[in-house]
Structure formats: structure tokens, C-alpha cells
Image 1 (cartoon, rainbow, N blue to C red):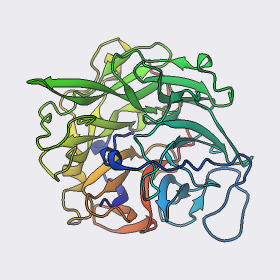
Image 2: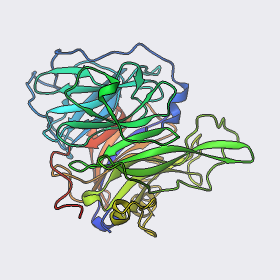
Image 3: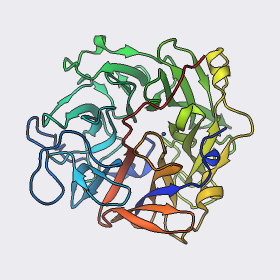
Image 4: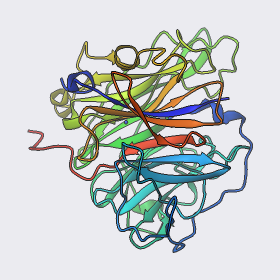
Length: 407
């Protein structure tokens, strides 16, 4: 059983995290399908507790998706763990999501299936929905014939969303969509990637044209092949793209495990402030055992000049660092978590300076999840209930990430 812990680590030095964001979820492979519980349009939003109130914008510092008692909802909460607000009116298999710059809308992925505990099956097909908090209504955005559950949805600016989607036999790709277009017409979406392998984990730098994502490339040795996710970035206006990571070249052996559909590499990239770098998670083989190894939180610096000059590689050499080792520390505290997933560095005015948000997971106890705000001295404040199983978490970013121009 797996236990999730959502943690915010307050970092004293910004240089450690970015001064120079399906994730894959192998544990859903054994889930049993259940009927999807769609959100009801115009059903209204409900608070987590107390008297019903009318929300005009998404409150709090961060949002997260969690399952409790077989129901899955999206919540907002402050970093102190108070003023918790339920943002979805009906339970559904929600996972990845993002709040709009004006904090009125939530773009969220809703999956077709849940496991036997009511948790979203991240390997099942999904649709992108838009939830209008102010008007208390929601609508599906992605085409009905496509699978947009492959990972990631993000606001590029006030009007456009970017997400990963697979249609027909073609590999999954990145698409741009006008969030107000309810036609669900594939021809009205703009495809912005052209890789021969599936693309997922879209995460935009708000207020720019730059998007980070993962390419599920393949690596084979002696006839045994595994998927090796690599991180790339692209400019949605010019279609320039470059590769940032190679994943862990040495970790290809999954002896004793079924290697089919195993994704062993880099996942869930997110930009640090001012686009100085990316944080992401990587499967590493030398720690907790499991079908895909341990997920560590890493950071790498970006060379934006190389990117805008059209170079095929744009990482800053020598800047890759394992934050799970240097910042979080294995066994801090002993046995608390075994995976660091879906990292979100501090960007925007609602996130505390130098903070790091991620979902922590354990192999052995999936019944509960706990969210913490923690500093390096070890002080903690819970921001999700211990009985919740946290799926995904993200800062509410209401201001632009960049100042000045890319020139």
C-alpha cells in the first residue's frame, strides 16, 4: 500500500532550486475500472465545511486533488493548512489541474476510470474540463474522440491552455486550445509538437510562449526495451525545441518485473522563477525497491540563449542536482516518504519565497496522505487531512513569471 505526503520545503537559498513542473504512475496498472462520476454543469460549488458560500475566485495558496472515502475532489488551501475549500461540486476521477491567471477558472483532467478504492486511474483515458468558479458551471474542452489523460494541463496565458493528447493511432502530442471554445472540435486546436514518440506532462511558463514537456523515447539493450522519458522545452510561437535531459541512462534493468509499459526516466517538469531552470522527478534504482524504482526530485539549469538560438540542447552543463539528496535528505524524517512526485517550485505571488511543493508517496501505506509545510529545521504544518490520498498538487499562480523580454 502507498502513502502520499504532500510537502512544501521552504528553501533558504533560491540558488539551490532554480537560480543560475503523468506523471507516470505505475501503481495504477492493477486498478479495476469503475464508472466515471462526471462533474455536473451548473451544479454549484461546495465548500469543504460550514455554510455554503459563493466563490468568485480560487482562494488559498495551492490546490490539490485528493481521494477520501471513495470520492475525489479538487481543493484549495493556504500554506498554513487553513481556509480549506472544496472546488468541485461532484466527485470525479480528477487528477492534473491548473488555475487560470485571474483565478476564476480551473483546467482539470478527468479520467474515465477509478480503482477499487475510488482513486483516479491515471492510466485510463481522460478529458480536459474547464471549471468556472464564479459562474458555478463546467464543460468538457478536449475532443471526445481523443485521450487527454496522458498527463498535464497548463495555462499559457489568460486565454490559452496547453495539454498532451493522443488522437487515433498517432503518438500523443502537445495541443493549444482556446479555453472558451466548447465545440470540442479537433480541427480548432493547434498541434505544437512533432516527435515520433508520445509526448506528455505539459507545463507552461505562464505569460510566455515556452512549454516544458516529456518525450517517451525508447531505449533497448540486448533486445530488451524500456520507455525512457526525456525532458524537452518548446516555443509555441516559433516551434523551436530543445532537449534538456537524457533521463538516467544506466537505469534500464527491471529484472524480476514485467517491463511492458514501464516508464523509467524523467517526469513532470516545471519551470523555476524567471525560467532559470526546471525541477522534475527521476526514477533512480539505488533506493527504495519497486516496479519503477524510487522517484527523486531533481533540478537542472536552463541555457535560454542556446534555446532561442535554435540549439538542440539547452541545459546548463554541470547544474543537474538531486534535491532529494541535498535538500530533502533520505530518511528526513526516517520513513516518512519514499517518492517525491509532481514538483512545483515557488513561482507567483501566492507561493512563499524559495518554497518547493511536491507529492510524497510511500509503497506500503496508500490509505492516507498528509501535507506539510516544512523548513530545513523540520517544523511542519499539515495542509491536507491524514485520511486523504493526494493525487496531484500545484501552486495558484496569478501573476506573470517573467519580467522584461527574452532578448
